Image 1 (spheres, rainbow, N blue to C red):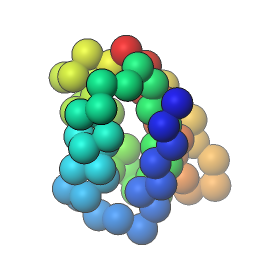
Image 2: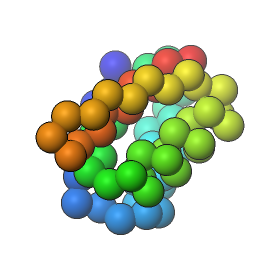
Image 3: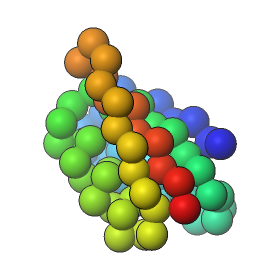
Length: 68
């Protein structure tokens, strides 16, 4: 599983990060973001790419686990 840290980044940077990572064709990714806009946008992008997304929140941060 590839882990990505997008804390402190504003959109569209987290979406660009996950798009580049997904070009490798991996089955599972984990990304940490710290704002709701990034959480929603990355979730939407991953779902459009055929991934299921599980979100956990902790201390103002969101961990998105994307599985094909």
